[in-house]
Length: 169
Image (cartoon, rainbow, N blue to C red; front, side):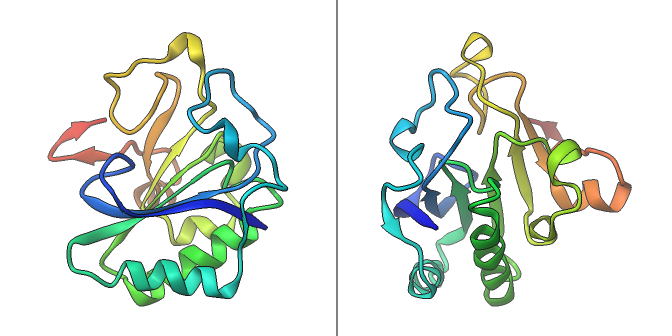
């Protein structure tokens, strides 16, 4: 398992100031992807236990409201074990901070039985579609993608879209 980069202060991938990690490897290779350099599973750096500790250490500051996990494809079968380990370690250390994850897989199709969902607060699911792209969309690139409140969805056994201050995004 490999990762492309870690951003210690990111304000574009979820609300507030966050730490973001971009995992390496994606088979979707969506046309117009904003991170094509993350597609190759052999690129980037080796992901180790020290990588998890580095991410956790960066999240210790009060101004960091959460962790964002992007790609590449964090839910790809080659990456999901590491995504799960990172998300679990983060939630154990920071139960009041949020985890946001972006994936081309669908929560209600490919991911419902995955352990990682227990730790994720918001999941942006669905492949990026260039024909449906819209730069005005919040936290997603194309209108087919959903911003999902994962814990509410698991509790209600149906997809519940994320709302902030009463506004569905």
